[in-house]
Amino acid sequence: MVNLDIHHKPENLSDKVALAFTKLLRFIADTFFKKKYGHRAVVLETVAAVPGMVGGMLIHLKSLRRIKEDKGWIKTLLDEAENERMHLMTFINIAQPTLFERFLICLHSYLYSILSMVILFLQEQLTE
Ligand SMILES: [Fe+2]
Image (cartoon, rainbow, N blue to C red):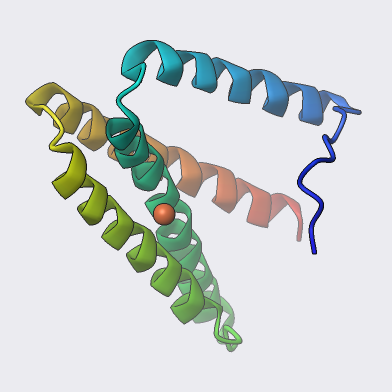
């Protein structure tokens, strides 16, 4: 069982950048959404739905390039992406985002998908 009371102290530059970025995003979310928790959940589910899809796609392409089995990872990651997308659909029905919030979701979805692809692709290239 994971002890959730333990706070990991940032030790290196990577940890410190991650913590600062997380705090910045938290500040933006708190400022923008205030007490609209359903709307905040919509954004979180939008974020959560991307990595599985991007990871599944990159593993799929890697498997094709190397003519190697994926050991079940493609299906697992795509299932996760679909699971998060279904969460998003649920929260959209609950929160009924405004037109502007829907625009932000679309914008975020494009930008985050592209950024995730670039980061995961570079990570794959640099770690091999
Ligand atoms: Fe979720």
